[in-house]
Image (cartoon, rainbow, N blue to C red; front, side, top):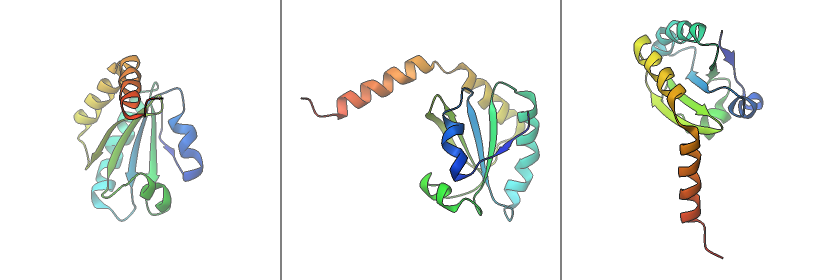
Length: 126
């Protein structure tokens, strides 16, 4: 599967999609971003069960700012509307493949239960 380009207008729908979502935040002037791009594309081509997307931080400044992107490349992983991972800096192909396998193995039922437990602790009791 090839990567998709996300914009502020398409971001939410992508996060709410059925597949896990791995996003590469990049810019055309960024050397490390350009070096990482073929790795990202290569891994994306091997995993039809995961959505791979790119956000050009130059064109999508508001989206990048809202997500607090401070350096690029930055990788973010969402699954079932939950941010599971955020990392600044390029990954090697083996590191990205390992991340993909970890994302596939996450017990989302447990993650949602932990989120619910945290939310109930922080919400005022009636």
